[in-house]
Length: 209
Image 1 (tube, rainbow, N blue to C red):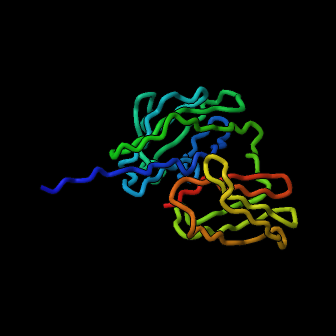
Image 2: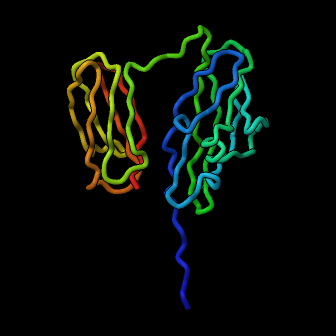
Image 3: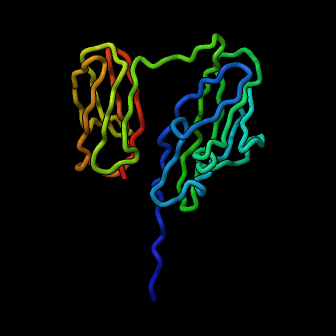
């Protein structure tokens, strides 16, 4: 008799980046802001359950308001169906909490999604632009920097416990630079990419599969 092996899950939350809506507006929460991934599960089966509502707005999936205990999927996010509507209350910060799960037992415990409400018409701008791709990845990671006002950038890749896996110092020309990290010797898992330029730092989660 052949026994079936259980399917394991490598579910990870790879993006949890803030939204910056103006007062009294509705904004889509894009995958670049909120994204969970698993190599074993399609987006429609990655389920988010809302734990707490935002204090100064509401969340909608395809135009229908959701409340704590109700769910939405990564597929909803991928298709731009998950939105936040700010209720007009003058406040600096809002947030909601959620957890993520998949049918194979994957679980990401309660996380907070933060919302910075714009009251003066301008969203805060990063000191430089960082693009790291592909993500998830396997053997390499391409890094592109632009808009930086410095001569050098420091790049660090660590595991989630802070162990340094790789580091580079690269020069910038006219505020731009590009480099590639060789990840072929690094085990699968979740890592943190940290890029620092002239005291300004950005951190992205990188999933190795």
